[in-house]
Image (tube, rainbow, N blue to C red; front, side):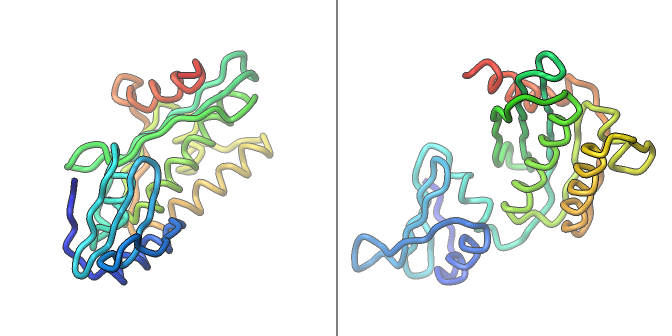
Amino acid sequence: MPTIECDAERARERLLDAGVEVAEGNTDHERWRASRGDATAVAYDGKVVIQGANPQDIEAILREEGGRAHVYFDGASRGNPGPAAVGWAIVTSDGIVAEGGERIGETTNNRAEYEALVRALEMAADYGFDEVDVRGDSELIVKQVTGQWDTNDPGLRERRVKARELLDRFETWSLEHVPREINERADDLANEALDGE
């Protein structure tokens, strides 16, 4: 059960800025309560105590400094187009901060890859990171977003613009193509979502 020594009001503002709903405390000693994913934060004077199965769902938002993260993304489509899903993981020197996977309906593999990149960047921004090193195993997506390759597909061009807008929110960023084995966790999460796990 992590305890973060901090100003409870400032912590509340950080959670609200990240889109987390904050409610009144349950006792006279509790300043407020907030839940996100599998974590609940309870604020007292000078500290916030985080409970739940995945305290990192809130802990990363409450860090005083933005910091640097490695962000992994992967999209998968069976049938191209066909049922599709995304997977992403955010990793720091402390380990996995957050990860997720979900179905996104039916689409092509390239569109699923773009959607995975966008979801991963949105989560990294929500967690307040200032710097991101983004990694994916789709050479096409990496080269299109970095401007090395162009695309004639209007749907992919639109997604490329969205990805660049998200990247430009960070103080510094890098985007690199990596082999599938380095991107294994994001790949697993996308496939687990497709399999309904």
